[in-house]
Length: 83
Image (cartoon, rainbow, N blue to C red; front, side):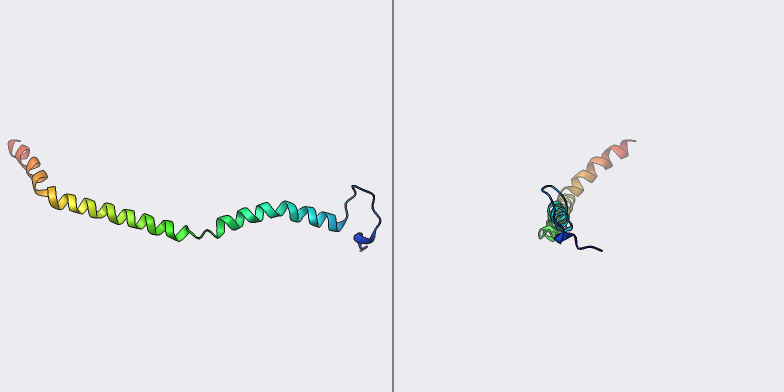
């Protein structure tokens, strides 16, 4: 195979080295976007934040049931006795 780099070219013609440079220039934004998706440092932090929110919601629900459970139960017992 001939070495295309040493072949005389006229302006605007493509050689192997020019094609490689052009491909590298086109692939650079794609690679940067891929790196941005794969290596997110806050990915684990987001999961921890969601876990804390779920725990807080569970604590509020348990506290509400413990605080208002008996009075809400009485609201259902009285109509049930009438039926």
